[in-house]
Length: 257
Image (cartoon, rainbow, N blue to C red; front, side, top):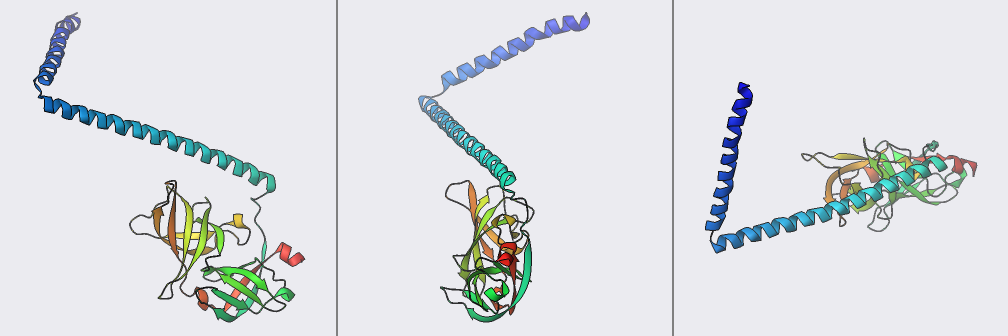
């Protein structure tokens, strides 16, 4: 009874305090100058505009995320239907490098293995450093490799520890002899923290290389034009074009031919 009586006594005091606060705010606004009121209205209009803009962006992002989820579901359905989860089996064949052509146009190697050894166009070529390139021309006992630095060289890749596919493309050799490339369609949540590098690896989705082979280190990532993905630069092994031996990855199809 005492507590109830105290609450009944205390409630009007809180109500009076609230009303006095409202009354003070009212007379305070009444005392504002015309210039102050205009300034406050301008700030309120800006806040409303920013809010509407944020709502617009939020709706846009939700639509894009819904599209990405839909595409991901379609990819998973296709993967199960055509068996993309099955890794392509490769048979390695060692080949000696006989010639290097490293001008700004071609960037290629010649190997001492050809169609007589089961080599066909499109096969992947690797070394102990990782990806070297891809066979683009074959003879009876020789073949030519399009180096990974060639701008026409593109493969599906992914970052170590992240299976989402990205695109790697060659980008030439810098003045100091450093081979470089570019990475495209990088998910927006992948970031480089404190100047650290990210290792880019091959993906089995391309079918040319087994998954997990090193391509190079991603040293920078920048926003793309659409704001949904990032693009970056990749530093390849510096002795990429100096190898004396390379391994050609023969597929079952190549062996059958």
